[in-house]
Length: 367
Image (cartoon, rainbow, N blue to C red; front, top):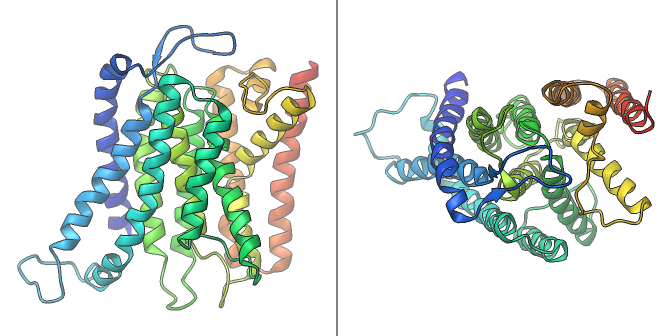
């Protein structure tokens, strides 16, 4: 298992880290640059082509892995395979079609984000395009079950989930290292859940989803080298759209409950993503209450409130990291405990969000 974790994280981390140097240099020449403005916290123009590096860090290692898989079959003996790898070759080949179907949707959203980074698309066009991609993916079978026999309902919720997470991580991208770091923590927690949660049909860890999530973690860690304070590269809309989409799609692909697994384990993704989802919901509410578009940027995020309370920007980001990790650690227990334990985990997450709400309120009104 440790070889799988290292083998998924390290190649994507190295590819993204190296690609980021190139896009830092070439991004401004392509018009991918974020200039300081009335709501921007940076004081100098910043390349925004980080999404390209993240995309390449995910796609290139997976493509190389796909080529290797194509070269393998049950009768082949010229490549010595470790005993723990051989049983999974046929399953990986079977799942690879779904993988590239998933990545095609992510690539479409990454390109949409690039166009937005370069030209500044109208929010209605962005939402329409995101919704179209989500509808296509759901129509191809990527949807949550929720243990109800109502395809129209689960399909609509799945579309909302995809579009919601895409925009959640886009809105969260408001400080150096914030969106990428939270996404890396969330992806790592979800990967751990997949390795700890056996499939109901064969009682084996969910290696396909876990592997993809670990590749995402590696790419984000490579990007964070360039995005850590003070940032030298932004992920831009291309990166935030891609990351939000991949987290949404992997949670739709994964099996959290059913069979011998407790049904309350299906709440795992909500626990892992509780902090970014809460931040998005409150920001949208504030903007609508003030009669503004929910997609017009401002400084009403939790991170901004923490800075107003006196925290430095890096410490504000670290605080959100810790809140996200705490909720995610609770999610790891859901598949191992009974209903009473699940209620306790749920109350713990509620307490974390209540603490966030208190800090936000004080930040807005002043001490």
